[in-house]
Picture 1 (cartoon, rainbow, N blue to C red):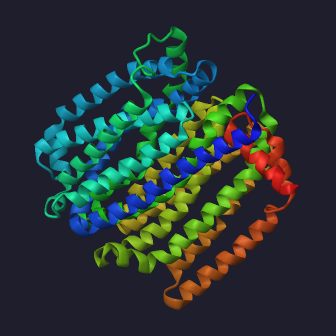
Picture 2: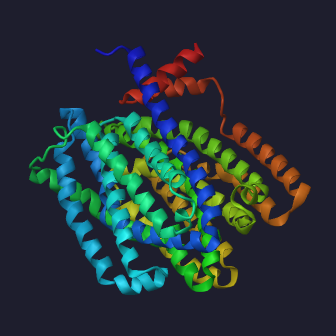
Picture 3: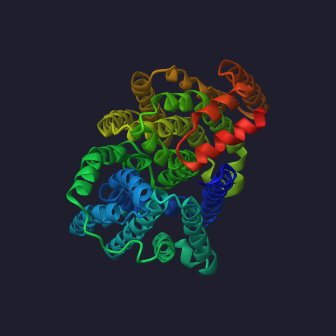
Length: 499
């Protein structure tokens, strides 16, 4: 039997490695965006965003919809047999034909696609190359997640960005003034890291395996709802916003909005790391019928996480007005108000992403698909109404309302499914809303004084309302007794602090 101290040490190492990888990737990604924004300008940055949008659409349709199902069933396979090969090859037998079909469709519409993106027809092949490399990296990253190799997954996240930054720094500056060269750099970095990931896993660990009929059936039944939600997710995401913006604002406006979306995406990585850590554990907890512990986790742990992200996003809003022109150049000053709105949307997405793994662990994938579809429909309708008169700000406001709807719906479902008072978690985002309203209404010293003071008061009220930082929380975390080492270690550490 493994000693608790060893479990805690191993869990701490994994958490630290994943955190360093994820947050390191965020820092490097920020540096990449700073360099690209200054070298490409608003027009070139907008064209780059549109090319990456086309690749992302392929990734959503062909790859992303099977990711959650793979992690769910492969983590169980790994827990039972210390391998993920059967689930991996079941997924690849679905993924490869879907990817091939997507590429054929892109090549069939190569000419009109190139005209829309304002690139040469031959550059469409760069989009295909980037999609292929990103797909390979996504698959190997999911293998690391399912086999509880979070340190290697964190390394994947960091190395992908580090290799991209290295390409930009090593290539002559004149080359990276061309967005097509930049897309090639993105593809090369993802492909190199994917090859490294395969070498770490080892070919014997992922050797071709004939999957059973039940493995195919479970993966398909779980993932098919996500096929629809990924399509809906595209219409509810910033990629669709860019497609609509292209018709109403110049390419420079697309670039200004895209930078705001990229910066918001960096912040959204915080939500991703949380769901990455908890999803495998939740799948096991649901299988063991630990509903009470799941409700305790949602009511006692989530407020800490959500308030921490709310404070961080509020700081981003306060710093945006002066920080963005300083970091990216005066040409991108218009990104600041867009980012302020997108921080509210990002917090709503953080709330949704924190709750979605619980829904997925219960196998309620059609519920997630329905919520995503409702959010996507709202985003499309609001984009069409708000973008023509307001441009990028209208798109950001539409994103806020659409993401807010998805967060509300997932809270309503979970409150009915596991009980408790989960709806009140929505109030934890109040500091971000206060900061955004202050940004829109006020300027100069009045903005900074009001935003900082109001946010501080709001945080203090929330700490009291949710009874945060009380000693009895250590008891809650200890009594969770979650099945995987990370959560067991967290409970033991909290118990020791209370004693």
